[in-house]
Image (cartoon, rainbow, N blue to C red; front, side):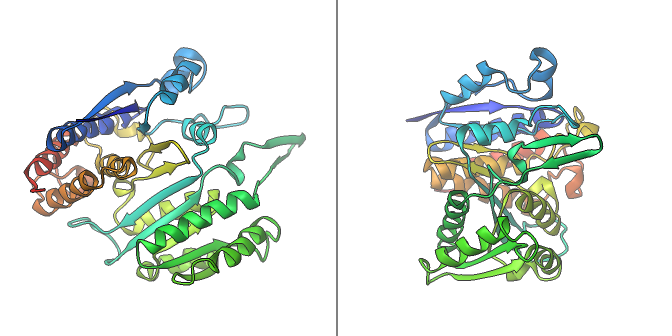
Length: 342
């Protein structure tokens, strides 16, 4: 029996509900594949801030460091001048989780604007406008520093090309180098150089505003899209809207030796505690976790179980057109996992 240590941040708002639902999936995977996940519960987020004066206490970070990977629920970030960075940003920076992978595609029975969409957003995760370098230089004038390094651009662009080789062999870089001539210009230059190492992959580049327009007209034309940090955050949420919403949008944050997996949606405090949140983004994030751990068969089974449960359609949450609870949908998916032949 293989054993893994998985740290878990249940998070804020609907976080505890969708993570609890995902823990049911973990149990089904353990039973199906003779795996063992030692769960290490970690305090982080708004509730941690209220208790300890920080959203990520040092003792929580120590727990995460002693695990193989992290499954994180959505956490609420404080807004406004002088507040600390959000939990995911801190963790990405601390562990250098530079590659944020956000797959977005159509699923059965999910109402969406388009069909035939299968995108992978590859987002640089540690630089750009999310570097935390903001300053007040005079009353009424603030500045934010946008960081772009050759190293950061090279490694995320290489990730995009390598992943494209496993998919439809097409990569698009979104940039605005006609205006941001040095920072986006660096990405453009690196992309053109790196693309020469992947002659089997079709490489193209588009201005980010034109890319946004084309995505809402013909998203089927795209495969892998590589973007700097802020662009990646915005465009992946836009693309989620094309395939049914954030409830269907998982993500992986990957570094050289560690990874964090989380749904890309927020904590949705307006529906917290009602047991109506859609847990699929969190469950698919765990599927990505399994893939990263090398448990590829288990990863495929979890995704197939989600698809099978949606096809059956008798246990759907409110956002999916049903009336089932968060945990009823999770139980349906868990049962599918146990019933699939491997």
